[in-house]
Image (cartoon, rainbow, N blue to C red):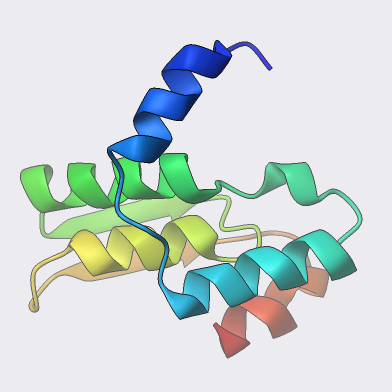
Length: 99
C-alpha cells in the first residue's frame, strides 16, 4: 500500500463505478486464481480506459493476465480500434476467453 488512504479515497470518489462484467471478473480472479493481486483493478482499469480514449486506435497489451485491463482498454478505444493482447500463461486462457 504505497498510495495514501486519503489519495486512494479521493480517486475512488471521483471515478465511475465498475460495470457488471468487470465486477464479475474481479470476483472470479480473487476467488479462483492463485495470485489475484496481479489484476489491474478498478482504479488502474479506469485510468487505462481514459488513456485509450486519448491516445490511439491500436493497442498492444503484453501480459493480459485474466483480462481486466484488456476490457478497460477496449472500452476506451473507438469503434474501429484494435486491441491485441498477449499472455504466456496458458492456464489463464479459459477465463480470458470467457470475458
